[in-house]
Image: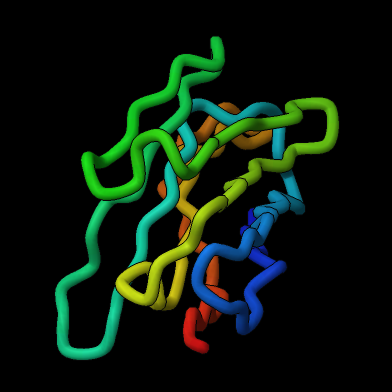
Amino acid sequence: QVQLVESGGDSVQPGGSLRLSCVASGSVFSIDNMGWYRQAPGKQRELVGTITPRGTTNYSDSVRGRFTISRDDAKNTGYLQMDNLKPEDAAVYYCHADIITDLGLLVDSWGQGTQVTVSS
């Protein structure tokens, strides 16, 4: 069994920064692709960005240049650095990862979400 847990959500003013973390635990052998998604009230969940095992990143147009995704495989952890936050970035942020377990199974895993609020 594997689990993803996000942390780091908070309330910040426009222009501020936050760093979200996503830790995988349990029977984790390795992590393939990781991604961050967000969902604002009344809206569909949308992709923020992804990172491959080699560290190749891809971002949505709305966050490119402001957000940075990284990972530390030794810690089974992914990060989302968010700079120059705007009110429209406010949402619940979810981490996703394709986790390979000790038994060689590929598990499509989601975290529980962490709230980001951006307001003055």
